[in-house]
Image (cartoon, rainbow, N blue to C red):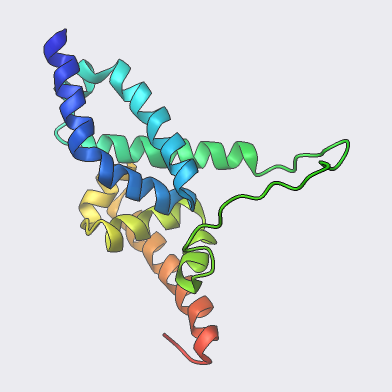
Length: 165
């Protein structure tokens, strides 16, 4: 049992920076990214012996779990939350340094699955086959999602310059 815990601890130590970057790109902010990574690693850690035994690439398994968890959360929380009264004092959060970056805003506006494909392809440098394996979809789905995402990004970012990107 201790060897399994040590293996998981080593996996987390090595994979955590990349998982945090992926989570940040998926969620749009570092706080939600940390929550997402923690929630997924808790679930994976509880089943680490089985995951490490059955998965050739545990990082791909964790990325897929992160994408699925993020989409599930997004579906649950995209509904309106009604308040009885407005708070007396507005909350002042520290602004994200990327908040006003046009590329970041355009990326955040993509649907979660398209955002995951773009992040894995252009930020993490994975191939279409690796992305398909990570997300549990076909290569054709990866290609179509990437094509739709890139068209959307070109349209949104091209309007900033008055031409096509």
